[in-house]
Amino acid sequence: MTTESLHIGQRVRHPAHGTGTVKAINELAAEIAFDDGQRRTIAPETSGLAPAEATATLTGLDVPLAALLRDMAEATVKAMGWERPGEVVRLLANRWRGGKLVLHPADPTLQTKEVELETFFHKIVMVRNNLRVLEQKINAHESLSSAEKFDWQQYITRCYGSLTTFNVLFKEKDEQF
Image 1: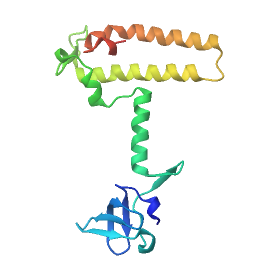
Image 2 (image 1 turned 90 degrees about the vertical axis):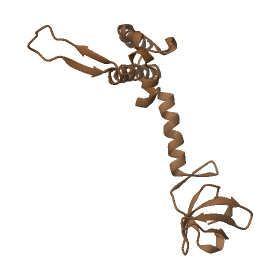
Image 3 (image 1 turned 45 degrees about the vertical axis):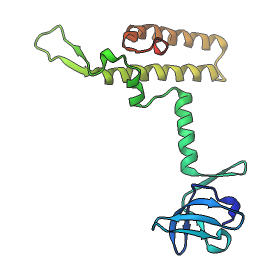
Image 4 (image 1 turned 90 degrees about the horizontal axis):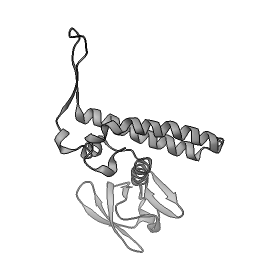
């Protein structure tokens, strides 16, 4: 392994000392904090040092694969408009937190259905996010004509219109339908 291929924070494996994390690098050696608690200065080119995790090379930049995938996943989630469940609940107005949606059937012999508002709200927001993704896919679709795209957009607009009933649940107006 070459010194140039190392970077601070990289996990590496040494044949005698096991795995560790690169803490400092100079032109001839790297300081590595090994998992046994010892810090050692190692010459990467002659010591048999190897990456302890998969790496990916992007235009000459070596980064740990786990870090690359995490960053890419976070960027994808953000670009797609998806949210983690905890992030969605953050959008719920405080007065609704801990509340329940209660559905009473017209027939008194049937059981009432209760749903936590956080769960219901999460599902509504996911419908919104999936509509946004659908809208993006329609707009980017190569084989649909402009007229077909317009027709599909009308359906999506009507769906958004139907969902405006639930705007009362949102804390911020700019998050509403």
